[in-house]
Length: 465
Ligand SMILES: [Zn+2]
Image 1: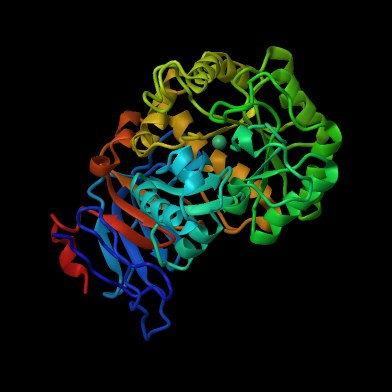
Image 2 (image 1 turned 120 degrees about the horizontal axis):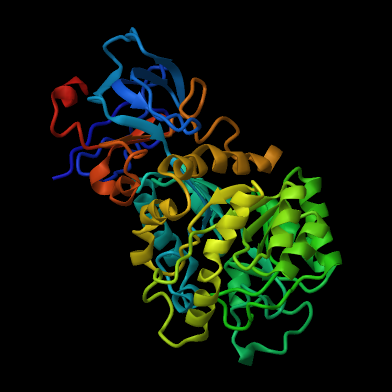
């Protein structure tokens, strides 16, 4: 039986779910103007930046922000929700820098043949699951996530903060062109293809078309722009080796984004695709698993971000049919992962962590396990710093288009209260992140408790109204 306790948070989802479930309490507006407050007592803090946990600490959250962090007692009145951390580790909510909120619970076929309403409902359920895995923010790198983001921000459904790119912009036959061959030839200026109608991707074959497509995403609230500058794994007509957009097309995108104070990220695997993008002023390379030494060096010199995912050959079981060209492409990319991380470390490239999980609810459950797999290349602390404060720096690159201006990915006074209480020390054992149902005993987003499994078993729940 689910246990729900409402506390007043104007306009925000407000629930305490004993078994990790969530509910929308739409009528929880309080008459009082006093923001809700939570006092976390006796926690040890991993702040998202330093590779250590603190001694016993108390943390006071007021409204959406962390107000006070202190090793001594914090005075608080009886209206404050108290959580006894019991010496557990408090850390920032996790950030996935490469996520596709709208395409987790669908196959490409379902995505292309279903009503958008259905896709949004699937995505809302997955957003809830994402939050309960401890991911309080995602950078959405392609898909019609604007309505989902809005509903989450309004507290209608539970989910992470979303930095949306909107439709991924591609060339004819590029990564993201999911048309069937019978849909060719396309009449220039003709009706949009199905994937364009739903805002999943947008085809642009000239600098002018690129400008239109970029501005359409910005108009809808994109925080950054995503182009596919080379071939991809999951799309049917784009061999991995191809470069897609021409330099003038890439420059048109960069200029249109820059006019709005934000940046372009490109999907690219090969040295040629990466270099063409860097020359055009692209600020972030998504993937890049086939980069060579000279290209990595150039990325470092230009101080661009490398948004890299720990793809391994043995992951993604069942994502693509055995023997399919997609499965073969995934293998080729995964074979580059070790070298890519080695190059990122060698040249001290600003490296973001993300998963790029697509088209599989089962794989989505392994989001935390993909972070845990980073111990192949990094210490647990390095991996956690990457998935919190470092990823937050990449998010901030959205500048004036940042939908959540403020401090994310850190436990510090004045930062957003997106927090996880971990039963165990993730700096010693990163596998804890792979088992969120058990390890993450409290999840707080924007100062609202979305999970508190301590409340069901400790006297602390008696302090709730
Ligand atoms: Zn992707």
